[in-house]
Length: 161
Image 1 (cartoon, rainbow, N blue to C red):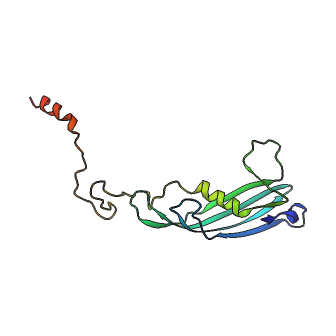
Image 2 (cartoon, rainbow, N blue to C red):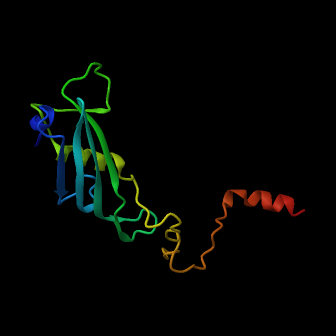
């Protein structure tokens, strides 16, 4: 928990934070690695803003070719912090409790919401051959790509006349 009392009473203009998550398997069971978050929380005349970024170093598996690779795209952290809401349906605020916020929870939530649902080692990953399992990024295979549906064989004889 990060105490914001000094920020709220005006004795501090900003509070810097740094956090390291050593186990990111909470995102997905196929994800492992660490994430580091850095940022600053500032008081702008009563409006408390959190700005920062999360830098993951995750070991993930490509959804197309099955190779393991390192995912390290940074995630921006931006949030408004308040102690109470005027409208209960406003989801863009983080509610502090007892003048404190849980930075680890904010970082975990950002990772869960912002990381992709499926990982690709590269945008144009060709994946694996459905017949022989060859990695099409490394070489091509000689498998027949067109499958013939035997239910249409009856029509083949009809048009040959």
